Amino acid sequence: MNANALNSSLVAIIQKKEELNALDYNDERYDDMEEELHDLEDDFNEEYGDYLEDALEQVHGKLRSDADILLPTAYVPNSLNGDHVTPDGEREGVWVESDEFPGVEMRLVLTANPARFVVLIGDQERELWKAE
Image (cartoon, rainbow, N blue to C red; front, side, top):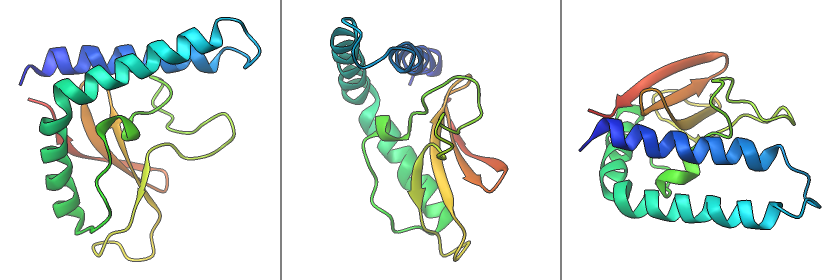
């Protein structure tokens, strides 16, 4: 797998999300930009889906989580800034339960630079997998 190509595709999706989130729903460009984002996500899932789903199985194994594995783009954050918090104050990523950390709210995020899955636990971020 070409980790640089994966990261570039991931960055393109996140940048498109940033552009879309900067627009008002009433903006005449919104629908076209949203369609562009969906096309990028579809291409990403087609190109890297199997590879990233295997990675997610490893991550879920490390966490001892039996949560459903979603499409890789479900884990992509809305911003490259690394905050992993939406403007509404919501945590980004996909919520997962873990036998390793019972009762703890955790979220998985597929972040860029480099492409990697991280788990967010409170204010901590732990890398669980990195593209190579």
